[in-house]
Image (tube, rainbow, N blue to C red; front, top):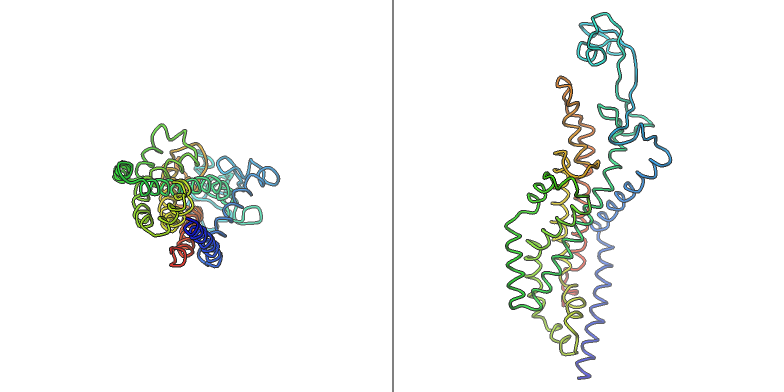
Length: 349
């Protein structure tokens, strides 16, 4: 018995050493650390927004929804504009004064351009694009992190319990995963977000619900296959012989070997959640908060109350789209780093 215990202890020490080496490989992974840096950048953006609003920025100018910064100039209404600096055509004149006649001087309000006060310019309504970008970072990051952690945790828990106990527990959990798999999480979240209940779902709640669906469905099925294979390996029998309980075997011996696939599950969960949340916000549903999806919505709509002025504000659209893409890419890069660090023969043995 003492030989078995010694062998088990030796196996545990070797596994701890392998785990430490795996984290060292993750820190040496360029994609993984790049993803971490990008996530930290978004975290700093989320922290910077309330700090700037409470110290430097004027809410009347930099509020992402109601702030306005317009340049007021006087121009002459002419039928054919020759000098845009001093003249306006019929449409702009009508916006300023619907009763204006050619030859009249009208007051024109135009959004402030790029400058020290507005590094990313403003939209057609005079709202600061940088303020909109920073305001959307907090909700997006909270939703994404919640979705990622929930997806990974649920997938690991379902797969580990199912593979360890087997029997009717495995059959029941597998049936539940199969049923959830038939209901696409992004589509369900879009339906839920656009329903009346969507008004009461915050970013973290949205991410949690999405992660629960994604983790219990496809992610659990994929991770379970690795869990079943791991349960057949000799070190599991050694741990049982040494008297280790079910909790210790699952947490200390089984779960670490599932981390690479859990990282992939996290990637699938978080990217889908980011897209679903952005799409719900783009449709102008969900909780009353500003998000990057809202930015894209306003960029495409332009000025909805003036059909003649509807246009795509590309600088707002690109900023919002790039932010969404970078956030999704950061989790993708972290997943690559985790998979490369833990999915090695040295760690698996």
